[in-house]
Length: 391
Image 1 (cartoon, helix red, strand yellow):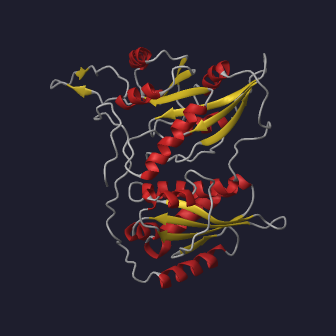
Image 2 (cartoon, rainbow, N blue to C red):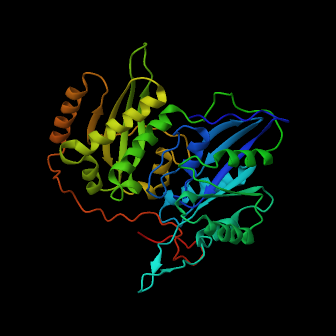
Image 3 (tube, rainbow, N blue to C red):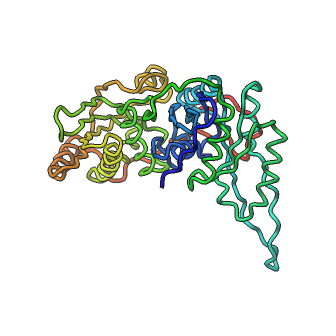
């Protein structure tokens, strides 16, 4: 059910708002809740967001240009450093910073006689203390504490908020459950208060400045994250080799995309037995893209091994990290078509046959993936951002 739009009262306000925080605290979910549509991809995998993504919200007399940013973390790769810089650049340019954190409830422990032991008070995450120290002191900063719905006893929230208040004098503090869209209107109200007066910069129907081909790549990557979980995600990138709009009504958007991984073992995992994993990813991504474009889509996916792409600055730029997404590649090692019309089964069978012919050496088990994920600033950290560690 759509949120009721607030009445436009007072002068118009417009500005950029950076959503900043650690990985997996719910920044993308918060953006989607504010937009009331699933624009930004979300998953349980840390560092899902790799680019600063604009989402425009018109809220009463205010226009909020919300920037969803990559989670700030201790980087192990050049990609990680690019992601951190994207987040910090967004914070530097923003009129308002929304610092997003979450609550991590501790399990209730019991004495030998079964009596519950009162849990320790919730404290600010060590990584948050580092990130807050980097924020400019001359800018409005709002604290949004997400996932409060997981707290059974809300009385535990007050000491946490008080502890954060001792770290920085926040201009507003709002507890929310972004997943349940609880508290989102209050967040937007508080942001609007601190935006500078000025005319709107976007149309009333504008949602983002990213092209459809950007989201085509992101929605393919989203399905990789969801399908492969810990086995492949950080080693996968998606480039759009062709994005062709339909030439006549009723025709489909034609999209060719390449999934880049770093190792043969990761490629085997993505393909799956007889192409089953690729088919699953392709169909789910195609359905997601169709919702975006509002029409039929034919999505063709290739998998290519691009060794060490996360450490190569030129390759990262080719893949769109730091520049506009796009760029064709000459790596077309495995392909599957995700159709939606009556020819889907035949096309998929053909793609499977072609893929099996081209990859006869691929067994069902594949190689063990020893890839190390980017690290969050977890509870064991000393509160500093260390230099990169070698993988």
